[in-house]
Length: 532
Image (cartoon, rainbow, N blue to C red):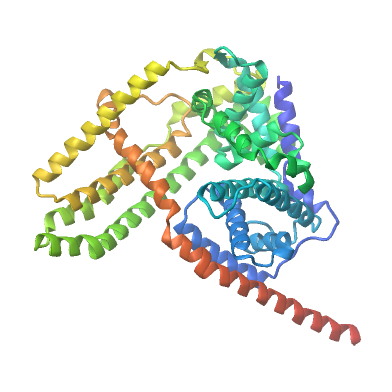
């Protein structure tokens, strides 16, 4: 027996392929030259190796980057929407001859309403607050443009289904929250855990929630909101950073993999999905097969990521040693300290390799749990194992939080203090100690990021032994430091800045000129054929 929620999900996924929808539209499509598109595609692949992002965020990031560059350099602003869509298409993020030309007007409307929001907000892009607001609005615009061009129909259907399945098992405690607010927190957490949305995608969701007419709004509609956009942003941030939201996201993540496998089962053959769900033996074999494919795919990505991180750490350390550590030792100490230099060069990549070896993909018992969850949700339409979800509270004791912060500071001081004392005792100077701590923190953070990707496959709780718990506890300050450094370094990535403004800007202008030249030659050729 298939639940009504599952039947609805199957129906929605059957019509979720945007390509099929666009191909049925007989209106003129946006086209680019294939040769120029291949050149831009190759460049984009090279750039993505330097500025790494998750695959599902690449297109949105490209839209934001292109939009920001064109607005800052003021390239072809009169035809900004058309130029933007074509550049995204040349980069390989949109299929050629698929998007209707009518979408350009929609993209133009989206860009203009966000520019109106900023221009009438009384902020200037010359100060820090203005730059932050401008960047945030462009990120929202990029999200909305991507949704306009490639609507995430499957993601919406899946989030709606997961909300229905998980909501009955959630018990939110706390005064002051209405049922509507509780539903918002639950849906928001489902959206983050399932779709793996970044901050901008979540912000856009909340923006539309608090301003229901924003999706179809025009520039004139944006003017009244511009004066209070900062307060609006603060309200959105409050929901995103709320303790309740973080608790729900953490709890929902362990159910995301099972729901994603369910999606893959349906999308593999939407027309036969309903028949598959009533055949229990065939369903179990199919789920096992899809799970094994996921495990293998993640294992391959994990190895590739470990190799990439090791090469990045080694090359970065060599450059640092050549330009900073060697000159510092020679001119400050009078001799080169080879022992700290070798340790700093070899130990971070070695630690990364060891961390990678200890990361394991799930085993058969995890697949069995996925099978059980899928059967349960398909047949009942709700998660009946409500005891697996904890009780959530929207409030925490401020006194308790203060005590925890004091204990965390003590742990932070202890971990760093012991390490610094040890390194000084074996001959490290202040500069080599700082280099060691920086790279150890980055390695710890990269390692935990890779581990999180694999943990996303686990439905069953992962139990750590006491020894692993103590190691993780002592490593926590380094993880936090690595996270902070990673965020700061990404903002001042010299290689990315060089590519975006020194290489990419003239290259993309050159690509547009070449495309116009090819179009001109084709028109001349057609004129000759027409005369004959």
